[in-house]
Every structure is written in C-alpha cells, then in structure tokens.
Image 1 (tube, rainbow over the protein chains, first blue to last red):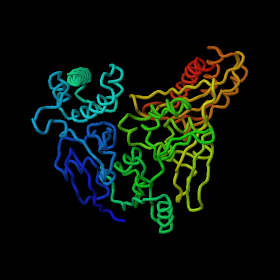
Image 2 (cartoon, chains in turn orange, brown):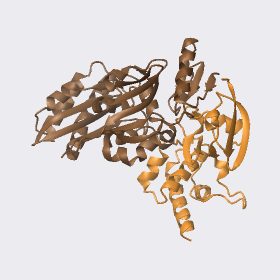
Image 3 (tube, each protein chain N blue to C red):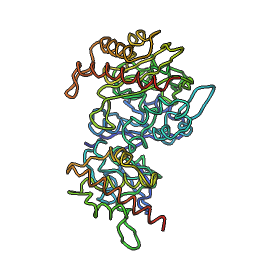
Length: 164
Length: 291
C-alpha cells in the first residue's frame, strides 16, 4: 500500500523499470519519465484521442490509463512506428505525409496509432469502417478528408507490401 | 487535469480484494474500485472524484469469462467491452446486448473499459442500464458475506448510484438468451459518434399471429436512471404492429416521461421529443427482426 509503486514494462521493444506515483497517467509517464514526446496530451480526460497508444496490441487512451496499470504491459507509441534499423518511416507515416493527413500535427500520433490497430485487424477497410475507427480521434485543423485519404493510401501500401 | 494523490492497491485474489475493501471501509477510508478506468479516470482527472485509495482489480483472476451457463449468458465484470463485442456467444444469443456494447464510446475505450464498470458506474445516459432493465439482467455482487444476486430493477438506485454496498464488488452480470423470434432494437441520439446519448431507447418486441404480444421498452439519458416506459408497453399489447400503433406508442412514451433532464445540449422538451421519435423508429426496426 503506497502512493508510489515500482513498475516494469516494455515500450517500443525496450524494457523499463521505474518507480512512479500511483496517480501518474501512462501518458505523462511516457512523456516525462521516458522522454518520448510523440504521445501528445490534449484533453486529458479521454475525449480527443491525441494520446492513443497500443497496450498489448490494442489501442488505448494513455490519459485514461494509470502508469501502474501498465505494469507488465507491452506498449507501442508513435516512436515505435519507424523502422529501427533502416530509419524508414512506417507506411502509415509515409501515407500521412504524402496524402497531407496532417496540418499542425498535434492529433497525428493518435490518428496513426488508431490506424495501426485498424489496418492490423482489417487490412482493407471500407470508408465507413475507417470513419467508425477514427471516430475517437479529434482533429481541430479539420483535416478529416485528408486523414481518410491517408488511411486509404496506407491500407493500399500495406496490402501490396504483404502481397509482394 | 491530474488526479489527486491516492493509495494504490492491487490485490491478487477476490478474497483479498473483499477483505481489503472491508478493512478500508472500517478505517473510514474513501476507497474506489478501479476496473478499466474509462469512466473513473476522467472523474479523477477533473477531481470530481477524490478517493483516498484505489483498489485495482486487474490482478484478480477469473473475473473476465464470458460463458453460457444454465441457459443464461454470464459475463465477468472485468471482461472488456471489446471482448463482449467480439464474443460470438453474445452476438448470436444476445444481439441486443451486443448492439448496445458497440454503442459505448470508441474502440480505444472498449478495449480498456470493463463490462462491469459501466454497470457499477451507472451513468443514466449509458446504454447498459436500459438494456439491463428490459432483459431483467442480474448483477452478482461479492462481499464479506459471500455472493448476492441483485435484479436490475433494484440495482440502479439513482444518478450514478447502485445498490452495491461499500464492501461489495460487482463480479458478474447475467442475462437471458434472447428468445428465438424476439425483435429488438437500440437507438440513440448523440452529438458525436461515440458520445453519451442525449436520449436513447432500447426495446424488445414479440409478435404472434400478427399482433404484438409483449413489448419491453426502456429509455436512457432522460432521468436519474434508465426508465421502463410501461405506458408505451401497455399501448402495444394486442395491437397490430404497424406505423400507427408504433406512432401511438411513441407519443405515449413521450407523454409518460415525468420531467426529463435538461442541459445546454438538450432541453427537457427536446429529450421528450427524441424519446417519442426513437420509440417509434426502434419499434419499426424491432418488428422487422421479429418472427
């Protein structure tokens, strides 16, 4: 029983052990303790989706998860998308660049992590399925159409890559 | 938007969790149970809730099964909504609960949010309490004296308040299999996809020999708890299922609402209007499914 806890978890393939305050959110842990600034914190109460990450392969809002709840978990953040060996952007990142899926970029990490889960589960989604999946992410630059284009492009690229 | 400090406990068995809650209660400690956290975390962040201790159930084994047992579907309180959504058993045997689950939040929320958490949280605008009322669901609570089963119509007391005692943990929810031939529908109006409903309606409908023999209708988002719309149900008994009887039931439902909630997004009159319209639409949807 304590306000502080020791947690062990893996983030983007790298193991970490840290002592944290129980009230620390996973989003703040990732940003301030691990210094991975790609996970953005927008609303801090589960509305905007900017802090979306994958916990054990499933998308989650890092602001609605305590760091202590992620003890033992395998986390993927936006920093985990880029190919670690070649430095190449992930096809989802490349598609967002090419199809203008971002303007200010604040919401982008969340959209890309949501897209990563979507295309993992459903490699060839319909427009309605993409819209349903992206419904939990807000973009205040109102770039939804280009985001939709980006996800479509990423789906095509990933499909042809897996077919090759 | 940061939670206030609290003591954190992660018991590793149900017995340990129950004993811990009893001890904290004895000590006068304001403890809250943490399940998926998808409703509690925003309340902590906004400091609407400032518990002195959190008891996290994530390490308690055996609370996430989804199974068919003695003719009813039992869902462990810690099963995620996503697991309920992906369950073949739930989709095939209780499509109304399945459809309600898909209306809760977004996939990011359903991945983490527990089924039991929504029942214990008892938000009047959420889908599950309304579904629980019309399906006569049963809530299994485990406390110092063992298990007790609480029927849905006694479980939801008022706004975000349930019949659970301070030392009790909701461990399972049970629901009947939807009888073959029953029609069902759940419809809601939200400002954005995935939001809590401004108003919503869930119902089941039975037709025999061209007549409505039974309708069970509940509304959510309009009062301190989900409410059964018995006047509308009565208006349908023996009626021919058509646009006239459905419109009459909608009007009856709207007229029967006492004093609906009112807020900046939806006045009481607007909510009343929505319930009438949703009852009418949901009946048409359910009738198309009924055989």
